[in-house]
Image (cartoon, rainbow, N blue to C red; front, side, top):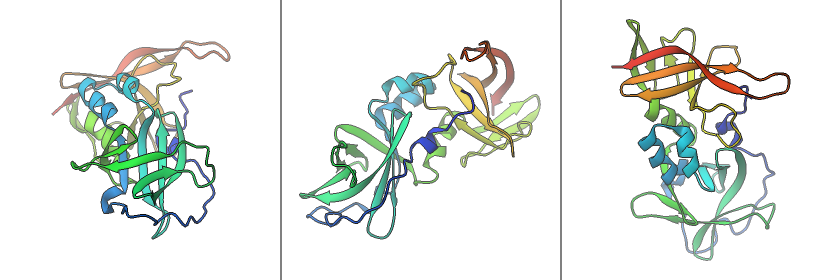
Length: 240
């Protein structure tokens, strides 16, 4: 359970490519700034308000995130995440004077109308989306917004950097937030920490004032039983 495929992987479903004559048809124009990592605006606001990915997950709705990126100079691909739990790759095209996200291989898949907003955001159907960064680094913004910065740990400095790296916390070198709580067995928000050449480790975390508290996760289940509890405090990091 703890050795999971992370949401950034779930976003990409490998589908076959095909040319489509409607890709550049119609009077609409694909905005130059559409490329990037977009997230559900309601979820994003809830995450910042509660500082809890688990609570924010309750506000995700249908589309959690969308990555817009070029396959080539003429074709846009869109990697959608549904509830941070599943993923699918679609295509962006112009059609009937508007913009549409669709599946060129399967006409029965839901087609989303994309509507740029005057404030720089977009709507996918009725879902407002905000851009966090480019297609390849925007995901790091989520974790850094919540836990990034410099901390004191027993007189040592620990830094969670904007690019997803961590310095000064034992031998860990990367950090990410767990965003998918659809089928989660641990009753807590979780932070993933990675060491070179090792399986990522998950910690339960809380943010209390200027303290980032990381707790061990204890496996309380037996054979083929998934039951986990928050264990003892491992790190008490104090924000500088």
